Image (cartoon, rainbow, N blue to C red; front, side, top):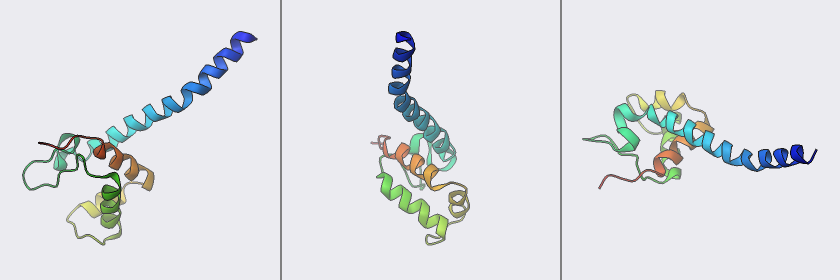
Length: 102
């Protein structure tokens, strides 16, 4: 019985860490869909807008503006509509955590 209680306690303590790791992996996978235009990890080249290091709130606001049609776009309005609000927050957090290109 004592072993079971210890295992249960450890499982409860590990739960939040496992969820955070899972969210980070999901965020990275969702953000990878942006790489074709915005570069790997948001390190855009050329005229494309870099996303690495931008504040998450700014990225969320931009994606929501594309989603609503407030910002004009050729394709971003369609792409943004494909994500839930939670997915947009994960993507924004991922790019905000990346180091901007020097």
